[in-house]
Image (cartoon, rainbow, N blue to C red; front, side):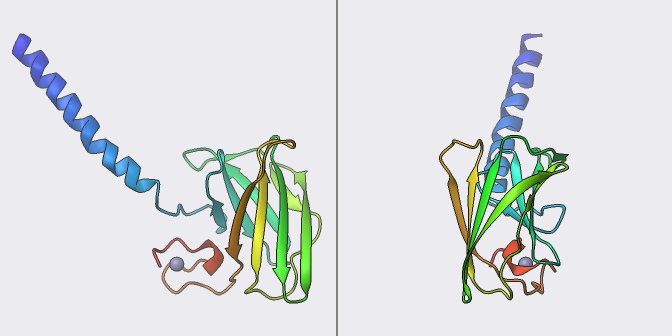
Length: 150
Ligand SMILES: [Zn+2]
């Protein structure tokens, strides 16, 4: 009986140590978001930045298992640094998502900053990236939402 218990403990311990590195490695990967947008780093619940065909922006939210969930207190502002000048997009809640009231400037290749606040008064998380709408040949997603390691 004692031996069985020890074997069991060893097995559990092994499983735990094997599972841990896999979990840690997973955290560095870019997760594929359901709507083809960019997963915003360090957001919890996960926030997805999606550029729609008409150049408006939608922010969707997902649980840890990437199941859609409703926006709650989040507050988002997007600043686009386009060649034609800076544009600031404000968002409003529409259904479960946040939708921009105005559109991104024409074209792409410019930098955007997503100011993400978990609640209206919170310190913003500033996420800066280049808006590249070209399709990645490997993952077939837009480059701004690419999940490949390049
Ligand atoms: Zn890719």
